[in-house]
Image (cartoon, rainbow, N blue to C red; front, side, top):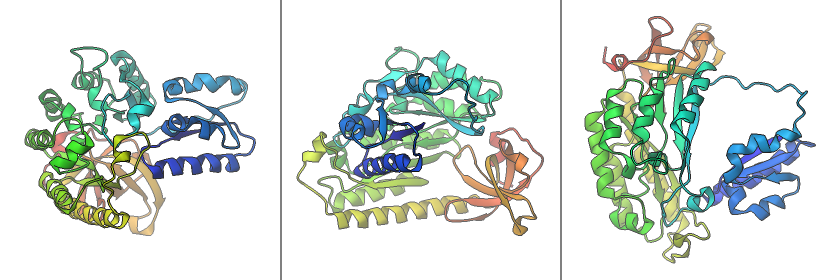
Length: 397
């Protein structure tokens, strides 16, 4: 059985989803092909008509997918257990009640829904027991966790429950809108050592007029204020973002404003993508199209700025001791003294490469940064293993 989880946030994502479905049919002859996800919701009939697709499951039923398909798997057949991941996602929320003019997600993901805190903590405990050390909280609209359940309990409260789980070393947030970042959340991130000092805050545009046309939640002014406040409160915070180019009506002046805001905030990593018209959204009917060649040029310029900002940040890590959760081990090499190549992340989202025993995977090591590359730093492990992650590991030598 093959389960294909699809996406339709852009035209390219829909195309990739179709290709993956067809490739799954070809690569796994005789298997049952089950398709779910947003493309399966937006184009349910088209997906069901693809030769070889046996079952289409909506996002509403996705959390019960295993139960839906369990009857097709013999209970006498052994099931291979997937290897433990030191870092793993934990979905705590789905649904969106915003109405960004370019986005199809609210139509495919439905209303806000938050898992109960008890269920989240129980899942986290089970993940830790299986070897997970860092949990990344995910959701369609992560910052609105709890809004559909309680007038009091919010994301910051959940984080405080999770950091109390024995054996869990880190809690990281995935993408969160600036409009849902408040002082309480920043206080938790600033004061709790297990809370990762990393915020991925979607920008999309740095121009107030385009922001309004996009019908983005909150305001650009608030985003500037809250990211500034976050940098003041949280030592060594890393900010990353998503930026769209070519939204209908974006002229060169508006794009220049986006470049200025990206540089002002100092994002350490940019996910840059071009506007993609989604049928059924207001922006799809906007006639003020931006030429494809112009969008490509703006994407390249924005990525160049992102590379410059990231490179500057990486160079500042030289000579520092950083705590790295080792995620994976590669083949050994003569240049590494016969040890495997290791790779992992710091709590503030710095990619670090080093070398050492394969048994280091799943442990937090202290690494002295000796060199930088285009997207990561390299160094040597110092001290013993395992080491508990703490903020002191980021002080300059």
